Length: 325
Image (cartoon, rainbow, N blue to C red; front, side, top):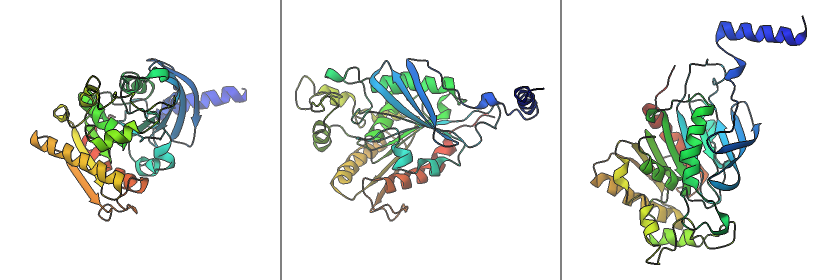
């Protein structure tokens, strides 16, 4: 018997006896408007994919963190999924390079999906993409990526099997997507999220950014002060649509150190108050200068605080999500 045949017999026997099959390892295939260009394994649980999508111009990255027992737990084991978004000027790698998402989440029975959201994509379908067209980030994430993940991995495919969270711009995206798709997510969280687009300081920050084609960032929502485009900001404003979050378990985190975090903090309080007025429960953590949340967080707009918030929110999230065996 050849070495290859021997290996095949051993593999089949192992699969039969233990339900641990080579096919349990992920095999990412193109589907749902997503074309897989390449797949690399960063370590035993963390993968990075380069993909293209019909919704957004250019190649994009997706990082996927699998549970440690994913390949050995058997074909009937299904896991909940966390969609975890980066902030402005960021990318799919941020949570596992600048942040410690793998160390924090790696022990949990959870699949974590960290996609590109564009340096300044703002997790929306742009009103004015200009030379950057298409820039349909919501379509990419919610209409393509989500079902693509369910097709390629052993996930819990119901609402009770999904959570969505993000930092800064990604915190906005997580809450806004939960508002638009409350039937898809059991849990939504924001870490230093920009949750009120009608705040003039938030608008100035967005419009002062520069996109990949070199024009002011009026692409996502339009020009805030022009009567014929002002409606775009209201239409995508999380505070305005807070009532849509009924039935989603919520957590908001903010600090108070620095101009940026101070501005963000004000928008989080407005969101909290809007939710309270609607009798929608929310866990709200204003950790101030960071002393109450630890992890060397100083209350600033940075990863020590976001890692601390992710650590703090993890048991709250896992208590809501369902496992399937």
